[in-house]
Length: 86
Image (cartoon, rainbow, N blue to C red):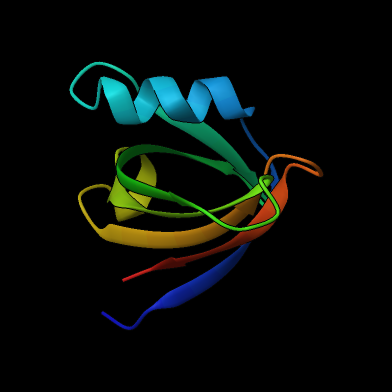
């Protein structure tokens, strides 16, 4: 299946991301997308220099893409970003 690039229109704050990375087997986060939403499990989170933007890597845990890997760039400042589901 080809990669899909999706716009993130809403999502969690920084503490929720930190909980998800600290407890990957029990914590997931939800991202609001243009037509629906998706729950993900975060495996890696890298904070960029501005302190508000993160590069995320993990697994989709809901919907038609469940089980597929994803990577995203997400800003907690404006709660938006982009996700690629591969």
